[in-house]
Image (cartoon, rainbow, N blue to C red; front, side):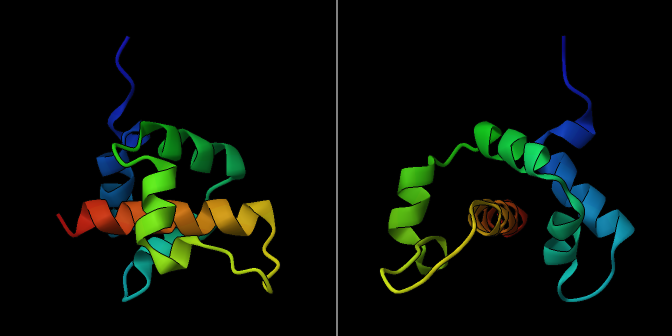
Length: 87
């Protein structure tokens, strides 16, 4: 059974563009999702989370920083979708 277009990574990018306008549309779109949707998007990711964390400063939490799990997964989701959006 095939998932609907809205459940694909590209579908999320298209939905963000269709429903939110402005420079921060992906950030606003991701902020509206729930944590379960973040997890689904990250599971679909062609880029593994360890690789993403290794290559993107925004994906790492420094030794003196405190981020909640939700902040980390939201940041990773936003960066993943922005990478898809950029090509």
